[in-house]
Image 1 (cartoon, rainbow, N blue to C red):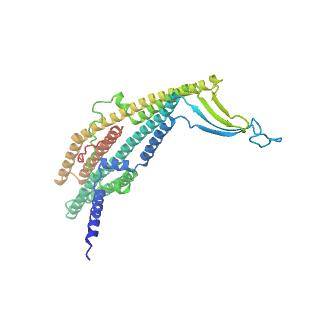
Image 2: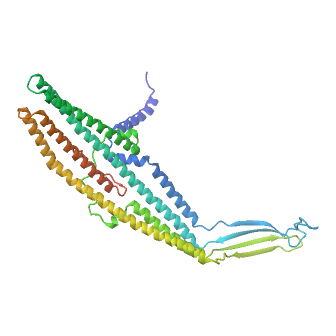
Length: 429
């Protein structure tokens, strides 16, 4: 069956786009890709963006004068007697219409507008904090899955080698060149490694489930590519107080300090009352003159000591509270950052020691034990024990690298990353 040319021209590009999208979805998932997907999926960022827009809209409204009040009514309408209900016979009856306007001083209006601007800044800082936490948590989930897969590759390699050793021991026993104890030892080593593999598979599934929390189940099942540059220093120029103050959590508290100070200035401004002006026109009966009224209303702050002054004192106390919380947050954050930095530096040194010293030594010991077994100077149990020790050292090196990488992620995503990070090929110990 031939497809009409117009339909083919329309369907072909759409099919190519769908195939390209499917190919991308099935491709490797890098750390940067995982973070971008997590950001795109986050509804909390959308909600905080809406809150920011709301606060800024309110800031504009708060800077305006209050709406004028239209007033109309009937004054002095007779309620009894011969003129009861008449709008024109009694000279005091008036049909009145007027307008009243509260004159809020410009300083107050500016402070009210500024207060909402401070709210917008606080929500924006909270959005940056959410973004930083999102990138950090996504990185930690990605790292957990990355290193559990690396651990699985290591153990799977040892399982394959142990199976070959088991076959070799079984063959040697059948030809009377080996003992049955060597066969049982080889089988026991394979069973233990397979059990360890099952445990790692459980950890890998849990890591995938946690990663799916951020990127979704389909993307969490994609193979991983590359590894983060965890050996690069998170703070090339060192840890400074100014750098720490850029952390979004501190920016949130700083915005709360600014908001509290604005509230205090507004409370101070409220000690001066706002006036209201009113003008009205009253119509009476045809035999009487119409009336015009003009008035001013002034609130009497007769108890400032127990009202306005106490409101101001309360706002000033909130300023002190916000400042103290900022200082405490800064100290806590500095201690936390220096702890992560120490964990990263120590982990980096230990991983280097494992790679350069412990793993080569363990490998040489294993080779020596296997050579000794092949020439009949030792049993297979000693060779398997040396091999098991080497696996444990390699696994410890991977665990140390994962802990150092996690500390690096905590440090590297203190503030939201706006640029792509370099990716290096994965290097197994």
